[in-house]
Length: 540
Image (cartoon, rainbow, N blue to C red):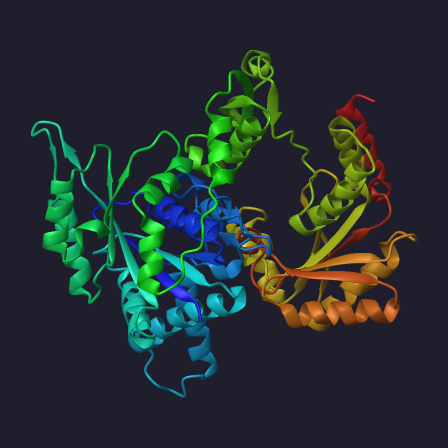
């Protein structure tokens, strides 16, 4: 049965709970234990997929397509484990699932409350990740700070969870700020005392306190914190600002954090292997050369929006014995006059963008094929040329339940959305060669629309291709129906079905179903007038 560690934070946000949790995870895994991690976020957004990177930083996408919190990137890098959608959930997702259950009548008309229903739903996620990961130790970071109203259901669920588990199966680690007051020339413990007091008022006693500070924390300060917070002095740990976040595990190791945790759990303490981490730090320290890499993007005012990219470049630099100096460039400020001055001195530019002018699901076709083409030996420049031509041979058609979402996203005028809703039509849409939405048809009713999607494949797919991608927005039964219709047409067809992400889903609305496949050249379907216009634009 898995042991559980909850990591909470106090006083202020951005203390480094994620780094602390990930560092402990690294140490425990280095001792041979199977570790998994999760982030519980108290905000009401269902997931970070539609949140502004200016506020939230990057959206970290797991292998199974979940759009999660950026801390998941830290977790994966520190514990070297691929995480899943079970590794991140929000209060919004909990409420969404409960409301859906209430609407179905699952609660038989009973009153749905924060306690026990919300807390029970949170505990279910804790049990589920332990079961699915088969981990020895699960580390769960609770987002926000102690005292926040929105985080209270998570703290309460964790308290209940500890009460339900055998003694010694659950530990709490509280990360708190110990500020240095320059005028007084000393660090202050009062914020930590108040933070722990708030935590204890909810019924949670921390087992360990990790003190974040930019100054040394003396034994006298530790003893004072221990006295007022009711923990042993040796269980008050210092986490001082370090030149690199990858030094934090070593600092906590020097304070025997991992062995103290294992002792509390009653687990064995195998020999630890920190050689890979030490080798990485040793390699990172003496690098002399520098390469300048430009990262061109939209959200460059907040570096955390590109955190995993920056970290990947840093790691790649260390592996090649150089320091990768990352320059964040606002793509909207680049133009023909300044591009040479801005990018001319760079050793590399990321990304090399190819605007495919098609939707996300048809882009998946190109990505899958691009991987095969790369393995066949195409260079980066050849891949660009290939993609710019190949996009014209990707056919796609999608049906939306209504046009309201497309109107709210500014993709169609209000008059079109209004007319569509009044006529009760199910619009069938695609993209023209310029990436603009185009009305390909309409259907009276969803069943007929699904049949039209399957018929479109029969008419337009390439003769040497029997592969299709089916995308849907929370409409799995309809997607299954399209798969059945395709199988009747071609028994040898291979179909991949997937639920689209929240970002795209917010534009098309729930109920969207799409089909994408390799087909005929879309340029051949242009009208004579459009072909002439295209040549004029290209100067042909």
